[in-house]
Length: 323
Image (cartoon, rainbow, N blue to C red):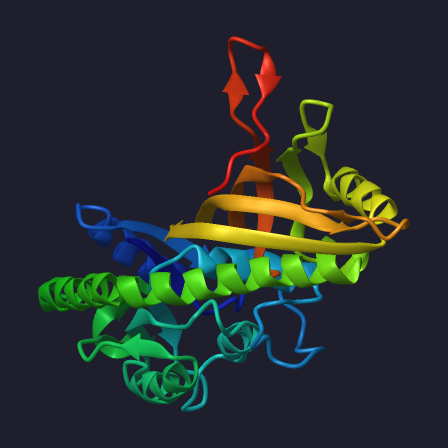
């Protein structure tokens, strides 16, 4: 499990960095998850300039970078102050910027403020419900009058036990939700491969471009040994579109495995179609492997490979096998 400690204040002179450091140092002693601080200062997001990303595809590079970080996490501990009885605007803006990347993950809260930040957390729990984040019941509440001395964070001994309980619940719920996340991710990956099939049948290179990462590395059946970059990959498909008047593509026996922001699919693929002369070409079955990564544009192919078995005696590829 990878749990992000989200530092939800970017205000100059903030004390939240002291609180986040305390949470991280305590969490790092555990052996049941990996913890890292996600400081919103490192992700200066604009105000929302596009509809919410319910599809997981984002136009702004800053949003895509933030989405990729959120997608790589299994759960979150939000460290938040309370500003005017509410959540900091920068944290609400960050929550609103992405959507699917938050889904089916656990969330806990460490809050601070005049009333311990409790009213901020009340509102955050409502937001979590809309984002399909499972907010855990235990929380850590840090009043400024008792847990800080002249702006220096000095938590009471009882707060350590409260934090341990919070972390126990976040890790447990993140673990319990993992199979559901994997199922959703697998469905999204399979949907992306359906897009590949439809784009090939439509001979639509621009639709294909959106499925591949800009720096995709492809090991195809044609020379050279590798095709690097989406333009090189599309040049390969362009040859297919030139050769065939009508293109068809099939995927069979596809298996998809998802873990930690990566997905691997393998199976068998076949390009077939009709030549400009009207002759039908059945094509050959090849072994195909796809590696996906969630880069903030949803799942994109960062590597693929197509191959045929090799007959050592004849020195030729075997192209007449059926799955």
